[in-house]
Amino acid sequence: KAGVTQTPRYLIKTRGQQVTLSCSPISGHRSVSWYQQTPGQGLQFLFEYFSETQRNKGNFPGRFSGRQFSNSRSEMNVSTLELGDSALYLCASSLAWTSGWTDTQYFGPGTRLTVL
Amino acid sequence: EDQVTQSPEALRLQEGESSSLNCSYTVSGLRGLFWYRQDPGKGPEFLFTLYSAGEEKEKERLKATLTKKESFLHITAPKPEDSATYLCAVQAEANAGGTSYGKLTFGQGTILTVHP
Image (cartoon, rainbow over all chains, first blue to last red; front, top):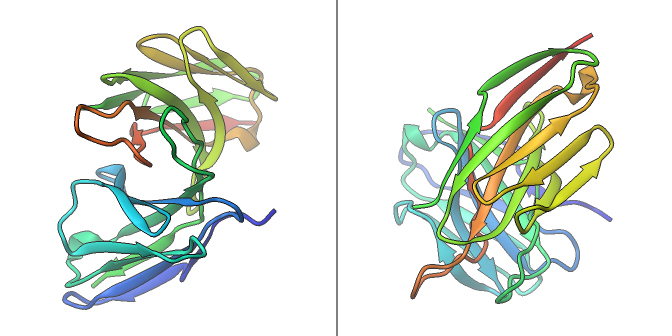
């Protein structure tokens, strides 16, 4: 069974630009979560999508947004890039997230974003 | 606010020298505790999920245990290929009016190096 895939794997952008990252979950998984990983802050939760709806959001500015498509694939967008947005962006998928059920999240390889 | 603290920050072992990694957590209610392994430049790889105090899980040279305040990852007779960063994360119960969908709170990780 194929794992979580993320594209592109590497990106270099300049300040003020915007970027779109893509994530394809494991087949059959319906929930997709996004995380930002930096050396200083570690892994931080950005948002989670299920059935094309954002169900949870972390403490990031509105420049960070996302969406999920009917096939569960997800994209995240960062507008007006800042130097501090340089990070490894990780996507994770899980089967579902229902009340009383704790799901294991499986991570993709990440997209390394460098902002110059 | 949910908090996860891992210790030590770094651990150097000789091949065959057993040891333990610690993960202390503070959450309003625990839905699950997760251990991941992360190699440089890659996404976290799932190891274990623990749900309640007293639970233990094993996989090859690794054993994870859980109490009401902390979790341990025991490594027995480690090999150089066990060298990686080990991450602990918690899934908390939602606060009143809130949601915990898809959100894992991570510790900073323990960098394990096993020398031959």
